[in-house]
Length: 347
Ligand SMILES: *Cc1c(COP(=O)(O)O)cnc(C)c1O
Image (tube, rainbow, N blue to C red; front, side, top):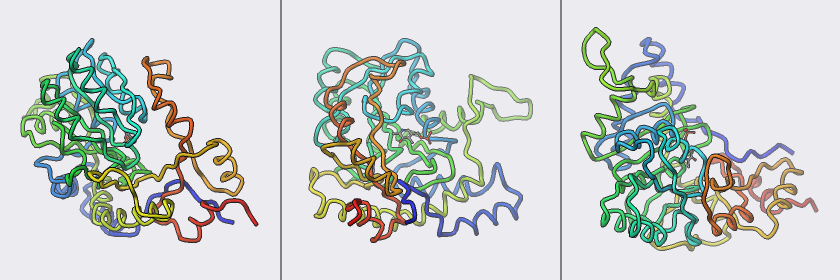
């Protein structure tokens, strides 16, 4: 039987047409699709500004830069996340302060954030919306606002998810998204920074293009980065964004079948179900059983505090990691394939 991948991109919209347009106009690196992708993306999530960048990791790096995170600063972030959330903290010589998960959402525990802010004043907090499920933004924002600590949202996995009726990525000072190959929409590789703050948007844009000043003499006022998104990638992004509502509908249908009933998470959350992940009794046995039938599944990321570059502790994250299995969740997954995932042992 045909193998079932964990996540594969779906390129059945205007991707070819827009790419052909970009090529016909000879606009590969720069061109009209970048500005259009930014404008349409900002309108979709409901933020004032969007700056397209080369990756989700670049988006987080630039968000930390414009909040002036410097060597020796503390930055809070969850321990249960993909390493790209925390690596940019290390790029800047700052110190990641890893926070455990809460049981209900698997995301950063708001009570722990409040407790730490009572004792310490980090330079920033990075909240991650994992697997398509929003973090509990209301108590997190309340705690951070009370102590005047800016929030960056890593919404790389959760474009289209909402908390309290509002798109993830629009609660904090800056929101970061990824268009890597397996994300809900893809540009082959890319990212976006959103913000309502004109000054921060200008600074992100400036840093993403080598901090070059206007004029022909190639003058630069600070150390910048080559983090722009190409027009070719943005062309694919525009086509993908058009399909996002249909992708979300399909992700929610897939989740409802895996759940065998309607989602019963917290009432304030509207997940996107980017990657459906189940708690199991025997994680490795399930992964092996599925693999024997050509079905790709995988555990969560090793909690960051277990990696050599980080320190910390997180018993809830460890427990989630020990039991969770991510299941095939491509929008192209057929009903028959999904039944093969749910009942993998051949009769
Ligand atoms: C994918 C991802 C990123 C990084 O995005 P890239 O585009 O791959 O650089 C960051 N954080 C999380 C949680 C991710 O899943």
